[in-house]
Image (tube, rainbow, N blue to C red; front, side, top):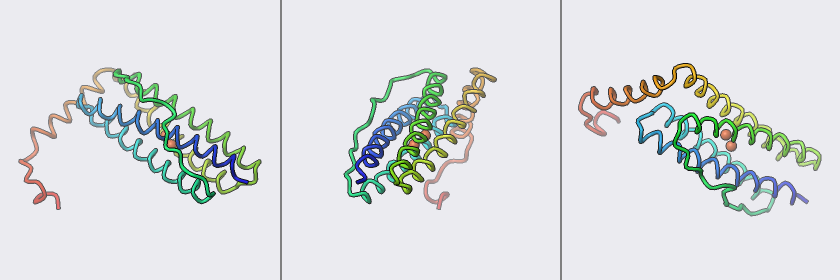
Length: 171
Ligand SMILES: [Fe+2]
Ligand SMILES: [Fe+2]
């Protein structure tokens, strides 16, 4: 009875998994270059996409389906920061459209709980979109200086903090 919903939910799992992989790839690259702020944003967003997978998987199991943990796409090896943000904005707007569409379809199939799940995912993806879009604006406005500033902040934090005594200082 809920086969269509389970199919849509599994398609969503694949897209979310691809997003987790892609954002973690961006995180590694940005972290390596010392761009802490953007590296942290991608990691935080990857974790949120992982939580999406968890919520979707819960629903699939409730509907007596099984979770297909297969990424919809391979992570692209994008190195340019502007291209990363552009890719992320496009992925988020694709996700927004997909979940809006899926919510409508689940509504038509009288599966209102899955519809609500998709609607709540739309809200999160809209927030992700707006965060990446803001970062893209900042980068356009301040250019390379925006990235340089993040590197300088990393160096300041690394070299100017008192000697870290591990767990003693961070209970
Ligand atoms: Fe998501
Ligand atoms: Fe997202």
